[in-house]
Image (cartoon, rainbow, N blue to C red; front, side, top):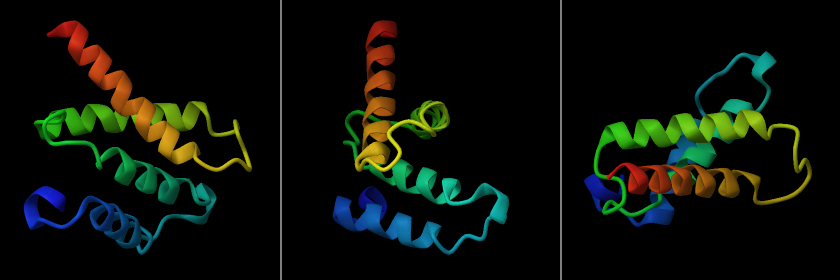
Length: 101
């Protein structure tokens, strides 16, 4: 939204979370899909100079989803988990990208 519609980053992330909150998911998933959407909106706030294609966004999403699942029972009750997962997924991707290129 930031790149396409020239909205500020924070507004774009907030709208992503808001729109994602209206997507119906089965009750057995609890709030996990909504948390993953919100963490993805955090990861999407990084610069377009770092992420240049949709493939890179997809790879960051896979890394972020994996980290979220691996840490699902860790840090329960502490704030910042979703932002930390988003940061770690982008940082891991950039580290791997720097090693390959």
